[in-house]
Picture (tube, rainbow, N blue to C red):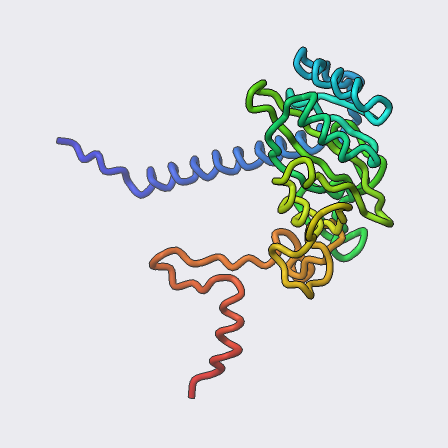
Length: 267
């Protein structure tokens, strides 16, 4: 039988071909990434910014809310098939009552906060962003916002099989909203977490106190301007210790320097 083992010259040619294909793929991937970045930076068209029409159920829920709350319904929108309604801060607790009674929403999924401010760039304007993709200007989600902070909640009806997301604006200088605990008892821990992480107080809450952090902790970790030391020392994703694979004697990042400092030179 003829020897089918490839010669060294043939093997080298195969390697060169594979390297050429890899370089071509890498260049194509880089070009595709640039095209995606250009598309993301392009100005949105009227078609892109047009609000999505409300579905039949969404419109029914909105009608009930507007009937009960009137002018307290500031703005509404559909986001991926979910009705989002922004209500006036002074009607935040009333919105919970209407959701429970008029909308028959007997289940509270969550209460939380959001900080719309872009995360600061490490090292000033020319520094690295705290994340790979980060807006430079304040933008708002569905149903808009009057400023940096908002509190939002999602309630559902276990019998009607529908739900609605409610949100309200929070004054940055005096972040306070009405508590929902008297309407949905499950809001207790959610509001405590929001107070702890965003610094939003809840008027009428029976006992705002820490859940995750020590009582003497300073600051609110989910605010965009909260300093993350790991990302100040090293930009995104911060200081990450990568454990070596089994059988790999290469020390994880950050361990080599520590080993040298502790061990010193052998005598």
